[in-house]
Image (cartoon, rainbow, N blue to C red; front, side, top):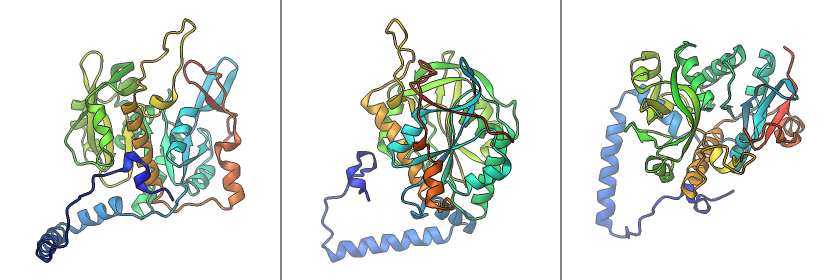
Length: 347
């Protein structure tokens, strides 16, 4: 098992003070009793929710993430589905593995897969939220409501889907001018499980490191004026588009392990495409600070997935399901460095 000390992202300062004094120990004990009293006097439902989200222990040391594939109609790809390889690399960089969840899968197959994986990722793309995505979201809600820890992560379009699915409003998104732009994020000041995980997230507030590739989102004013969203999510951070419009760029659910980023953490370390003339295809920051933040997001999500106890029916089924069995292709270059392409699944 990798010790947190070997991962700079997970490091935290340690005190060098000596605690040999009995007097000091007494003070510490007194403070602990006071804090215990504060916790004890809180509302029971709040305490229970906090414990569920923050103190769940590792149940799966080698988690598997289900990644929702999306339709592709480009060149030789007709009625196929794909997953950008950068998402898979991002997952694997933190010790996770990946399984495809087909865009066109039946409810029975979706239920089997969700019961086998330890977390769900809705990636970026251009697809419209479909019945399969709705069903996956509902399954995740049901699992967590019944006591099974099951994290969900949405990136870019996946973030937008979380907004649509939670609000049950599929026209809620606002037009934004944030395609191919690296932006600074601004923390809202809300307490956060996600952003308290690593100090390397602070770099995102000091330089334009977050990679944005979206024409839609939800403006800050719109989010805060939508009760179905504010009752379910905390808005963790905002950004502004090219026209100066403020929008929500990071969310986490209050009572569920659901997380969304409007930007793309997987692109900083894994997307490098160039045009034919040698110019960069995308405005993606590849600095040390940006990549550390990207890795921290991945480590956080995989740590969340380790709190889930789902398993495949057998080791053979598990191995056969992972994307280790698939070859990536550069068929969508320079939009993506590489992608996994799949035949559609008939429902």
